[in-house]
Amino acid sequence: MSLHFYNSISNKVEEFKPNKDKEVSIYVCGPTVYNYIHIGNARPVVFYDIVRRYLSFCGYDVKFASNITDIDDKIIKKAKESNKTEKEIATFYEEAYFIDVKRLNSLMPDYIPHATSYIEDMISFISDLIDKGFAYQIDGNVYFRINKINDYGVLSNQAKEALVEGARIEVDKAKESPLDFTLWKKTDEGIKWPSPFGEGRPGWHTECVVMNHKLFGNLIDIHGGGMDLKFPHHENEIAQCEAMYNTHLANYFLHVGRVDLKGVKMSKSLGNYIFVKDFKTEREIMVLRLILAFSPYRSNINYQDDLFNQFANVYDKWQRAYKQVYYFLASNDLLVDVYDEEIINKFKMYMDDDFNVQNVLSLFEDSIKQINLAYRQNKTDLLSVLFNTFKIMSDIFGINYYLNPLTDEAKSIYLSWQTARNNKDFNSADNYRKKLIELGIF
Ligand SMILES: [Zn+2]
Image 1 (tube, rainbow, N blue to C red):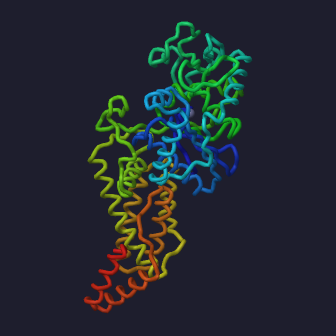
Image 2 (image 1 turned 90 degrees about the horizontal axis):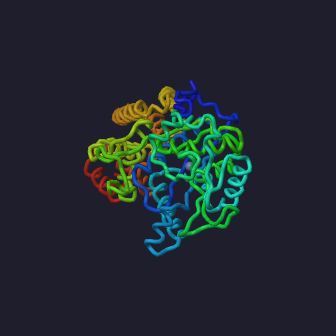
Image 3 (image 1 turned 180 degrees about the vertical axis):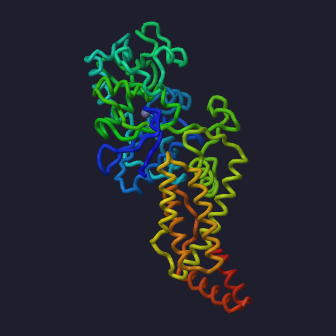
């Protein structure tokens, strides 16, 4: 079996075949940096990180890009409210974003394109679209002419008429179609750039297409983002790409569901959201990672205290076993790099099955049971292999276990504790144990 997942462009589970033999390009739409990220924003940060790590594990050379939208109406508004420049706002929240990314233990992207670094490219892109007849200007704004795209709606799988009905779209009577979207926006306030169409700033949908193309050229392998980006954002990216390059944007669109809070859609305007930064401890943030990692990626997550507690129990159990067995194996020089093929084959089978993380979770749980049993029964060879297998799977899921360093001193006390215990010298064992507790080993 090889990797299969649900391609939003065909609405089918398909076999994944990259353009190049051993190389995979992924572009995931990143944040607009005007606030801290909430747990819903963290979901793509965790999900695509696992996809990326898994593809690397399968032997692909993965090129991973995630952009920063550092110019937007929301940034301009925030800058005005707080008497700062757009640049100051964007820099501050971008830093905050990457602090959260690192605390979630997601890898940094290989490429982090910033919209404001590509303004010239966007202006020439928009000029070309006008020349080709795919865009038109009204009073300093430039709009995309969607009626020139025959299969507009291909991603949302809806006819143009239905999209008009169902969507809240900008109403501008002068536009040729209500679905025509802004490529260049004339702005009266905030930061603006000079252009042949007048002073203004590029539209969000144009930013991603231009940066995507600059980084990877035509037709990337996987384009990702939240389910809510399907329409209009990704639909409009596809339309521009077809108009400009006469090709699809990506071979695979991989979308991830949202996170609701106690059954209600999170929204900053309603005030019902939880910031990632509010998960203060290393344990809390790892529990959040587990929730996001082990929920089926296409379904919405209903976040509530019960869910947190359920995964906190799971994580605490794994952390206890991992720590106990790690110190035993490391002190006795029993760490190995071989793994249990049967378990890893199962792991791959589940991942290849449209990222069936519920089966993967059961596999983690089974592995921990086996590890605890092998430890109790003192089957050290088996334990070494099972432990390393569990570590490999944990690494692909980006799960960290927090360990204090095993210094030479700690190692020698550990071995003394072990000997005393084996000799049933419980007094000495107890003294060594106390020292190990002080060192954070127990
Ligand atoms: Zn995007």
